[in-house]
Length: 508
Image (cartoon, rainbow, N blue to C red):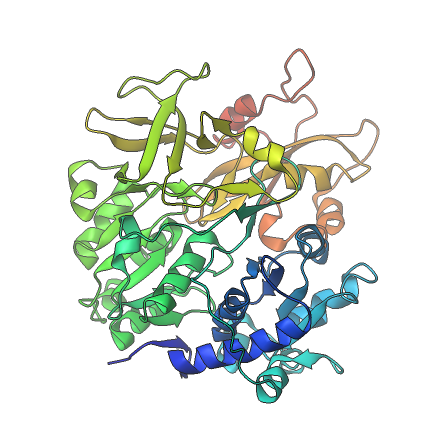
């Protein structure tokens, strides 16, 4: 049986060795003047070195800032600059691709440490061998670990990463915690211990997977990382490593259920104890099918990067109250409010507000007014609409007002709209999600062309290439010169959703 280690592909590194590498990296970071409260950007895939970088930042009281490696150079550069990063730890292929596109001087005043891309990640992500080694002249993580002695300072408790989230408007905002969170065993915090064997097929740059990785290591469990989700490989890893715990998003359940029956029954999944699903609403029929297959091990929570996980739904809850995302944790205040801020009666939908007393308070880095915009009497909203039943169980009745969730990944229309509007042939645009059987939603862009200008899908896609991350590119583009508007000229997204959810309209 594995004991306190981090696993990726054929590599299995004992926890003590990971911690030793992290302390050596901390020594190098400290020499670059990284200290209490400073930010260290991590731009890596699901790799053991991601854990190393996180632990190194924690050892110095610094704050790890995980960044989505799908981001374009412009998006990454914004985060590096906005968070005032003192260091960047980056996989070699990403440095090869993004480095030449960064604004001049962005990296000159920061410590940059390049990380070799391991074979398992290179194979999964189709990275050519020449890009797996750091660019010539780069300072590499392997050199740092070989040359530095371990940092011998006192190690503080594990800290919360600073994750960037856009809300629904403007540039991404860093969610910065203002102190330590209170240790507790509520909700998913109670599933980690030295015997936990945790599989993460979800990216560590997202809030919940990142927290799962940190908690697993802190509690001396075993962490198994997947560079990319693959349904059959997931089953193989569960069986091979006797996985007890996972974090997963609903679209992964959908793809697992589409495997042939012969593949599904081939693997022993009896070790599973806690499979936690979040990131998007899980359809009751999908959860029921997984429960029938995997047994009573499926849990769910509701929350956000800002609030943390405020509810907890058990397998019994899923059977008895299909569609619920659980009841509020003992440390959570959860309210459903109408537009005037009044509490809604049981069964009546309204905007979901909540707060966790065990979670350190947050601010948006360099944007404190952003928090004020989503707060009522100390409670925070993500813009979701739902209701509580008579017994206090929460049900989601609508998605975030504008946010699109593609395979569990949050996509914010304002960012996409801003880039599309840079195109000279576009007069106006509205971006929203439309249903997709596999991913839950896909990005749809409805565009009013500039009068007198020709607009083609190929030309627009060429314009967007390099300006938006690939996963944010609209899967569906529709021309509609007569988009519905209110009296002020603002586009009625609700009416567009109603129209295009049914497949009406003319695609380019």
